[in-house]
Length: 453
Image (cartoon, rainbow, N blue to C red; front, side, top):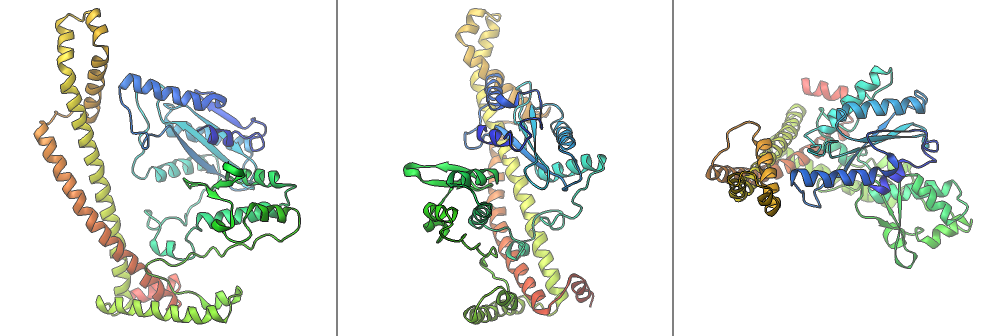
């Protein structure tokens, strides 16, 4: 958290700290305050999550159209968004950055509530709900919003054909190499200046033994080493220093087009030739395209798809089935986790209830309380957890809970097998349809006409 907070509060990005606003916390000590509230939450409720599953803080990034808003106004909009999202129950601070062409906010909010009795629970499609809230706040302030995001299809997930096609985001290594090229293009004075430019671009610098340098790409858990064996020729630290000294040119940026996976897509030979690919590439691409069209033809024959409308219907059905199974699997996993958590609370309650009965029989003696304080705290925490999980419903018998958990586990196993099969069918159908569209040169309007025939 401290690394992220220090980045968010960078003086160079926030007008020397003038563009930072906070609610119920001090941005300078927010990391310690968030940890302290988590410790109080554990002491009050008796609950403790697994270390690898615990969340201490959430971050929201909110960007605005260049030239449409001032930095001060952007900070106010970010504060309003955070307040409405957390409903004033979580501490947060907003850092507005002006180092890019587009002004943007980094909003950090505590996962634990202000009274330290509850935690923020991430929910299904919370990102979509947050986007809708941000859009509403922006519209209320006469600001632009993205009306047709490219990252979603049918309002659900990114269409798999898009991930396979040219719209698929480049890999972490490709993005890192591009960032290195951009930093070197700014002609840093020395290697330390180069590292500073990389940090400003959002790539955290990690220093290892023997002077090794690694970069943590945004969205990546493990840092990537700066060396030729990892990134390719021209990316050793000595190569970077040679570029800075003017002794060699900046390494050529890698083609961001992803390699095909499993079921490939037709490649545009003419476009690749215009980009400088040679005769060897042309020969390979022609053979590759023939193989992909053969795979598409086999797919059509096996499924007896005789026209474009049938192929479109098959593809849409495969996509819909995959998303339906995804929803069912996620709902089953949620219910299974809820049942398991309830069973654990019941067991803890049963173990500590005799201690509470003894405390009650002792007429709430202070001496008894001092001797059994830990057990009584566990009892209260277990009882509170049961009440929250039941939500006013009657507590089922343990045998019924065990049977329900067994049934849910069996359903999850069955659904997962169907999910994997549906995923493979969707991938194949989407790739084949994309190849057919490319071969026929169909635009969106032409596709609709083909489907109507």
